[in-house]
Length: 512
Image (cartoon, rainbow, N blue to C red; front, side, top):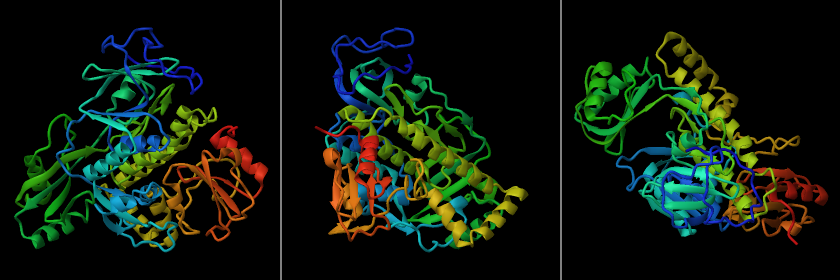
């Protein structure tokens, strides 16, 4: 069964549990479930990876009733280290999570991301958090899930979404155990093979995998100096190859000879075979911690929203992991979507607010897909690609080029199109000094913020949604800024009437 777009009623209308939801395209009832009334939520999220867990927490900041259904019953058996880039680290700081994340991560310089071309950190990166944070993905998921649960989200493991149907009042969801659930909205955060996207019928065009890379963590019995010398020799012509010491084991990255069925498990013998083919030795690898592989498929969902059903994270976009942008892109999707969807549920969202999720985030994903395509080409051992890599390496010696590519990869260069205005409009606000602390400390609750150096303005009838700090000492080059809950600058100026217009644009009608 699939679902197509419906006309939304008033968001204040209750979601009726007794509605026998039918697919609006063909009128059929859901294929599974029972006759008992379904459990009712505001939002059901399919998938409790970093994107789903972060989205659940964002919704709970606004009192939205959230249920997360996660297919897996246990955390992943392997430990894959992911890198949180500058913008994602800023988001952790904005929600009061940074100290918890830092306790489990390892800081690295914010450089060398683009196609693994070694560079230094350029001066003047516009962030108080200009570093990379390496953290095991299962640990990150556990921290974000615990945060969401502490805020009141429900998470059920071993419960996959298998079917759904939307109507004018909500979405009926069937889980794998036969339970029927009801919500105002459903969000698919269920990965690159998203059931929600496939059942919804949203196209996922792009390029299939044409090559594969094995990634593993394992011990090796060969002498370290022998491994290092061989790796240096091979990387002269193949930058995808790496055998790097890391915490008592080696992280092995090696191009595979072909593309295999993803359902087939990756084995230690696969690594031994490919190592011998490329290096002439398998380095005596043994005792693996992680065995996995990834392809270079690159795909982007044609739509992020169909009626009351939305997509985020890998369900909306997939790409090779070069540059380490995947988890970051999904977390940033979640923070962009969370407050907007909550506003729709709570009843104050302007009519077009939810549409800005796709309008803002899909172009960002398009840019990530393009830069990963470019990076994959630069990893090739072909003469032309090697020549291009040498040229780009020379260009990255210029601070402006180096900074441009780092800001692109780390997402601090993202600027949403909010119309004409100063360059800061539409960009995220850095964590500046304000009276009695830092700006991001004021954004923990996920509300808007009016940062007012004139001390003459007011949030007025929007004070239930927007905080106000009158602070002539704030480290700003402009009189005042209005920040959205995701930290992006929605308005710059000093005129109350103009401010009121923009408050209405982003935060709906004033109360009272």
